[in-house]
Length: 188
Image 1 (cartoon, rainbow, N blue to C red):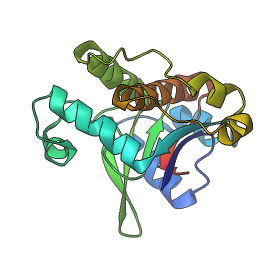
Image 2: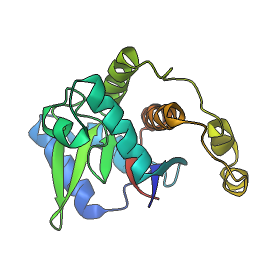
Image 3: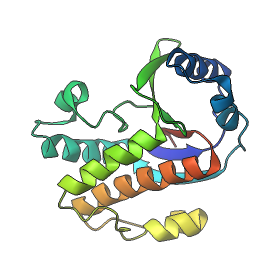
Image 4: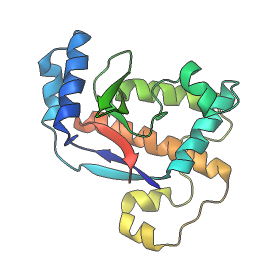
């Protein structure tokens, strides 16, 4: 199944209300919420390859922390802002801790773009995969996604997958902060 990052309005009223309620419970006022609730729709889209690629990245992170795999790391990781859940939302607001929202019995992660960037920096500092570099095909995907999809693109190796997911999350969080918009990771 494809995985994508989208930057723009949540377009889910119940989740937006739950996110605002959570931020209010942490002492953040409605004024801080108004920027991301009134942002543009469909600001940008970043292809995150597929669910298996995201899981491969998370397994890499788990191993960096000394865990067997991402299933073990889920409850124990220091990098709590990563997309451990199938659907994750990061808001362009600094807050802690992250939480899980309930969407009709389906858990959706809610975190902070600023905290996601901090976690990604921690992963970069520990990894030997040259994180921060653009793997082959990434810049083409960012410049013209339609050409990218027709290109017959294939990644070279496992390190390229890890670089791709790290860069996609990093670029997505930076863009979300710059545009005051939510970042959503889900099926693409």
